[in-house]
Amino acid sequence: MEPTITSKLPNLGTTIFTVMSSLAVQHKAVNLGQGFPDFPMDPYLLELVNKSMTDGNNQYVHMGGLPALRKVLAEKVFSLYNTAIDPETDITITPGGTYAIYTAFTSILSPGDEVIMFEPSYDSYIPNIEINGAIAVTIPLDFPDYTINWEKVKQKISAKTRAIIINTPHNPSGTVFKENDIQQLREIVEGTNIIIISDEVYEHLIYDNQKHLSILRYPDLLARSFVCFSFGKVFHCTGWKMGYCIGPAGMMKEFRKVHQFNCFTSNSSVQFAFAEYLKDPASYLTPSVLLQSKRDYFENIMKQTRFVPLPSSGSYFQLYRYDNITNESENDFAIRLTKDYGVATIPVSAFYKNPVDNKVLRFCFAKKESTLDEAVSRLLTL
Ligand code: PMP
Image (cartoon, rainbow, N blue to C red; front, side):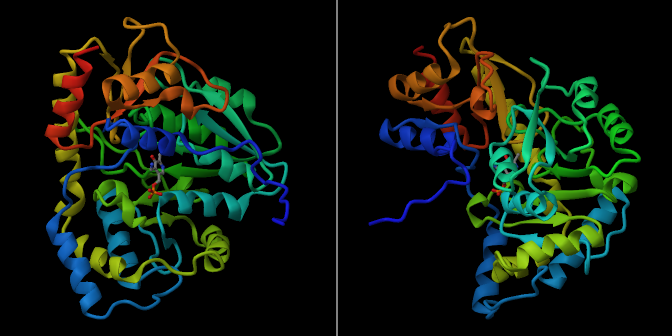
């Protein structure tokens, strides 16, 4: 007989991404739901990984990550944000951005702690918080701009607030932080014991010459932050599950305590490859050009449909309103679009703990033009 388990996450089902991707396969739909590219990645990076493996770089590397990779990342941070970080103590290479966020939460949260977060949001945050016995205090972003109402944040701060998690560029809305957001955040955390977890996995996918306001630019904020990144998103290799976390040495020491007995060290051959690849700044500066052209292409062909775009300043995603088409709930409409029209999207309500139905769907434009064309031709029959 199978033993019974008291679930640590009793209310959790399968993620919407898995649900919609399975439905997409079942109905042979064009999958603009889950955020993964279907175009080839840079062959040079593939060549570097192949070479790294055949050269024999296949054994454990340092628990914090390959020193050469941490060094090149520290140089990148300095050249982009003018902030000096110590690659020995302030960076840990992780198996993906989600893992970095989970580890950050796990190293700081005790039962009963509160974490301020915004909705809609990437759906790993709440389970990451709750599995640690902590409480997610959710604040809805203002619709339709998806901006933070900082007055609401001030009202939710309590003696139990342990952390605030932010995400710029933002999934699912594609909005980005402005200087005012940083200033407001600073005023709120100053003089407190609050830790910032900054999810910056779309760091290099920001468009229209906007500046990415990384927490790494602000030494006073970095001194209380875990800043989480993903190679998967930026370099179009989401299946590799590689990322990293940057934070001050004392906090990183605690992070590594959790990391070393969960994963110990991340994929070595891929780390050797990235240590070489990132030496050329073009490697991380060109993805935004490619992805911006995809956003523009998609937005342009979507003009033929009745969907109404909301602006996307970054990420893989653009939101579209459909309230002029139907009154159906986001969930029902997304399912019908997949089954009857062969286009999979994600209902934005899936990114809320308490679903809010603004009649908005998320489309992933990180796809080949032929994929986007096919999706739009199907949507035109609507
Ligand atoms: N944060 C956000 C906002 C994301 O959209 C994603 C990817 N969906 C991640 C983190 C996780 O990245 P990774 O695949 O490296 O775990």
